[in-house]
Length: 115
Image (tube, rainbow, N blue to C red; front, side):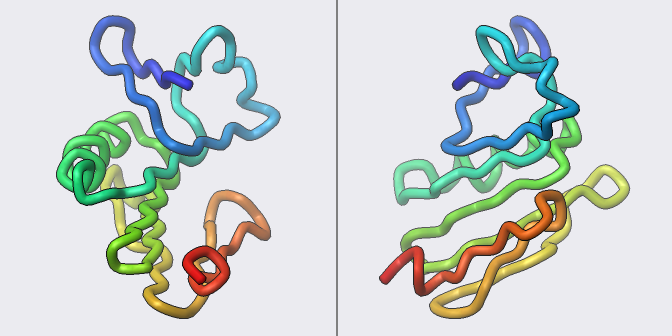
C-alpha cells in the first residue's frame, strides 16, 4: 500500500507497515500521513534505496520506527527516532531477538525468521 507523506512529493511502498488504532484516520485509499512503523525487506537490488533513500525520507517525516530486514546478513535492525534522527534501538544478526520500541510485545527471533 502506498504511503503518501506529501501529495505529489513522496510516495513510498514499504513492505510492511503498522498504524496504531488511534491513528487509523490516515488510512483511506492509501496511507496519507505517517505510519507508526515501516519495514523494508532488503535485497541486494534494493539495498541502497532501502538503507539510504527510503531511510532519509522516513526520517524526514518522523516515522517513529523503521525496521530493516537484511536477508543477506540474516539480520534485523530496528531504528527509532531520537531528536529527529534515527538511532539503533535493536539489532540481531544470525541469532538473537529484534525488539520494537513502538509496538508493545513485538519481537522477532532471527533464527525463526531465517531458518
